[in-house]
Image 1 (cartoon, rainbow, N blue to C red):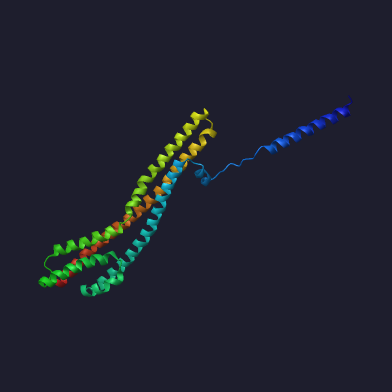
Image 2 (cartoon, rainbow, N blue to C red; image 1 turned 180 degrees about the horizontal axis):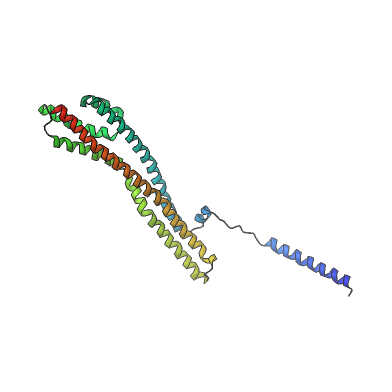
Length: 249
């Protein structure tokens, strides 16, 4: 067989092999791996998805409380400062009582009203202030009522900050169990076998921290502001007592 004829046969065989390879490649379905955090959550087990959903509820409600509490405390501080200036400027309980409505919801207004009612009872009965201890107790009751109102829902922030990491840890342990189960089922310790379970575990860990950290920061931040407001109300008691003693004893 001559060389030109041998070359032609080889070229024809190569073309046939190439066509067969292309046909086989087109027959194999092409799969696209789903990537990203959302796909990772959707591919997780049902229990892991429930854990993430619970943490999401904790997180959303905590953020709602934080925004609401921030606005409430800002308004309370502004109204407190305005009422305190008026209290020091007027210096007469009757005039202050008439003007107090425009400063709501200042916590100091509530404290003032508790004290004013006790002063009115004692003055109407005896013509003067006779029991300073009773007046101070009434003012303290006003402080307790306002602190309870301002503290409302703070317990949820504390619960989220303390419970969310453990809820996430539960999801983490479950993900690791899934990974070990895959190792036992496949007999392989390759990254392909354990990756889904480990990824599921890490997502739950991250979700727990994402829910807990802002709640903890918010709880500490608002707690400090509430302590400052309580101190301001305690100082107001002293000013109120001084004013009533000057005018009604």
